[in-house]
Image 1 (cartoon, rainbow over the protein chains, first blue to last red):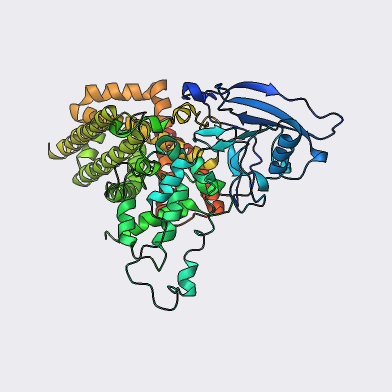
Image 2: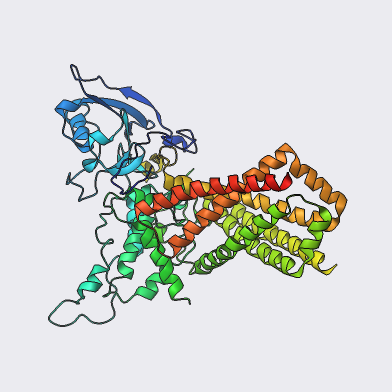
Length: 280
Length: 140
Length: 130
């Protein structure tokens, strides 16, 4: 079907996944095992089930999939409401990140029904029954739905996400931008670093140790087009690499999944064009 | 399948490493290349669009496949040159594409280098044979 | 550090939902590999033409067998798909068509166009043979 915005959930429920088994290629510690089914709510007319990825680092056991069920009539409208309800009323050990509950902070990014999105702005009306909830893909799991973002944040640090300027700051006022120059940052500055896109990028799955991934390349673009930054050439030098930048094969899972409706794929293409511009 | 932190290039980071996350993210730094690869892949792609349409149309026209007719047609200078150019664009494009695929999926360095050399040499050999064949038909 | 080593890696391709974006991309790659095999045939065919009537007749016989025809059909589709999707990629490289709606529209167009061109080519080819 035709998708017009990343908000849209595909009406096509199948295929749910690529033809690979759930544990194919997983290291022994990453293999997912069957979990437990928690009792269903009594007297509920609208039951919603969740198959949730669980991992308890202290148990020494492998990750498992637990099934929870809630009464829709006694729950808030969003997936995050359901997760909080489960944590409050069924299983207090369920662990996930959350903060703003309105799509601003990016903490509750997770894999919902096979695609990445923020739990706080995914309506329970939009998910399937039963629904699957996994942590963001290809991250070392600290606990349950909490992935270790150390590596992606280090990749962020590696692109020097700060103003690199040689001209001394003007006395008495800040470095000025014209409204047009400021406008060039639109579509970049809104990124909340939730890493839905990077976690959904197949190239980052295979080569995430070297490929920077869509979120970080979008941030790199943000500094490349900033009129106050004077390290454009150095930045392009640092990015021009078969892996850091050119592992992007324009698959565009990033643009499809961005909860803020940004377009990392387009920004990466623009970086590649900038590199060609200075060559010819 | 994607346990990449355990496939470290040339084992710079043993399992016991205390190196910082930033050190690992920087890796071996930027190769300061890739722009040429990107450019040539696009140039060959642009060339292949008309060339492949020409190839399909020509093969359709010769679908009856009479050997004499075919050899005469391939021997025409314009056809031989077009075919040689097509082969050059094709195998260059193929070399670049296969290289990326190897780099994507093969993480053990020695195997990867061997595969990359094999890709380059096979493409070069096929190109040489193909160009020789089409020029031979033109000059005999 | 010891706990970090034992951490499981969360699943990716095993659970990520196939979407038009990723499916068309992997098909582009698979058709590319398949076409690379086809290029060997193209060279072999040229060599057979050089070598003369007997060798050429052999290649021709193999191509007219059902397995040869099936492979040719596969190569025709792979060629048109890779060609159409390649043009889509070239447009992206020039920073055109990145809105999600355009991505999906061009994607489905590529699927339809490559199928139509394949059918058209084989209809024409079989008409020539008649």
